[in-house]
Image (cartoon, rainbow, N blue to C red):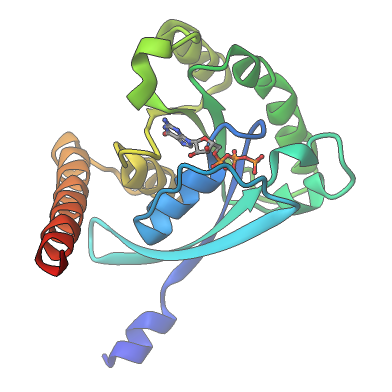
Length: 213
Ligand SMILES: Nc1nc2c(ncn2[C@@H]2O[C@H](COP(=O)(O)OP(=O)(O)OP(=O)(O)O)[C@@H](O)[C@H]2O)c(=O)[nH]1
């Protein structure tokens, strides 16, 4: 089979990223799709798109269409249209901001309502972001776990800043949607290999800057 034939067989999955403003949705999508992070906060107006191809066990290639939805859209007219037909939803909050966790009830209700008439029900994952700020945590991990258990959600803690578990959180949702089992070793492997790439890239940048100086 030629490369183009193989590529045309890629499945595209619509993954919607929602949650309060400034909880880190754009940072999460940017870290995943572009291996980059910006400290400066720039509010997303409406929505942004990212595309990224990933591999799952069994030589399965999938293209994720990531819809990064601005936090200010909650309560707006367009939100249910953005969320409609999503295969996966990342419900994001900031572990240092209790209000962003409390507001998840509203975000989650909107997801359920938006898909009431859809043939497919999305896989929803609860994402606690900013774990690099563990010392400032205001949302206890057991509250997070309870919310997942009560609502049947996939659970993940990440840091868009360091990249910790970012690839993994998208990979787990894609695997769940496609009914692919990721074993523990594969999950660890995914985390480790991506951390190595980041380590290599960040150190290479430092070496390059040093040589230019
Ligand atoms: N320390 C830390 N800061 C983060 C992390 N993720 C995002 N931030 C910062 O949090 C701020 C908000 O991040 P954004 O990604 O713009 O937030 P958002 O959820 O897309 O915001 P809206 O566009 O308003 O919906 C920025 O200053 C980011 O640099 C993280 O994992 N750790």
